[in-house]
Each structure stands twice: as structure tokens, then as C-alpha cells.
Length: 169
Image (cartoon, rainbow, N blue to C red):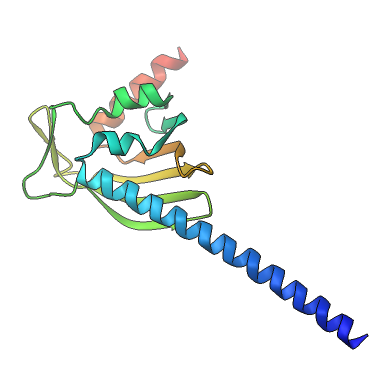
């Protein structure tokens, strides 16, 4: 009886240990993927590599503007090759991640965008564009869902309200 009880306890501990280490390993993979994603976003220099992180069945959402895009629409929306965007010379990284939380298949990054130029206009200098970005990864490590929460300046928020109002009318 004692041996049987000992074996049962040993097996239970072994299963829990193996299960826990598998979860830790997957969480580590997700953290690495998310860190790579945010590094590429911050560098903003490898558009094909950045897009390759996304699955073909991507769903992208911008919560403030109530946008929902598939991968092709997302590519047109983000459009890094557009020359209207320029990094600010004093800020080589376009964003700073302050916090990163991960599970075995998702990551949430919180931080802010550094100043940049768009269409010749300086952005994110007076009003810090804070963000929370949710990323959901599939079993192949590709992003299947990307949700942006961005603290846009007031004039963009006004546009967002107008856009959302038009959609409901």
C-alpha cells in the first residue's frame, strides 16, 4: 500500500512538473515572439519581415476608430513604405514598450510612440500617444489577431467620433 501511494504521488508530481514546464516553455516562446514584434515595430525598417509575422487569417482592430481589417486591408492601413512617415532624428525607435505581459498564446504591450513626422507634420510631441497593443499568436507563432488601443490626440479623437457616428447613421 505504501509503495502504491508513493508511486501515485510520484506520477502526479511528474505530470504536474512536465505540464508546468511545457506551459513555461510556450510562454517563453510567446514572450520572444512579442519582443521581436515590438523591436521590429520600433525599428520600423523591415516591412516584409514585419508583415511576415502575421497569419493570412489576421483580424486587425483599431478600437478607437472602430476599424476591423483582414490582412490585406491591414497592410494597406499600416503601409510603412508610405514616405509620408519619417522618424524624428532624435528618436531612432518609433515606440517604447514599458510593460509586456504574456500568456502561452497572447501578449499585451503597453507603452508610447516617440515623436515622428507624418506628412511633414510633427506628431506625438505635445501629446504622448500611449498605446496598448494585444497580439494573439497561433500554433505556428503567427499573429492572428491584433488589437490597437491608442491614445490619439484630441483632433484624431474628434475624427474617430465623427467616423463612428457616420457608421451608425
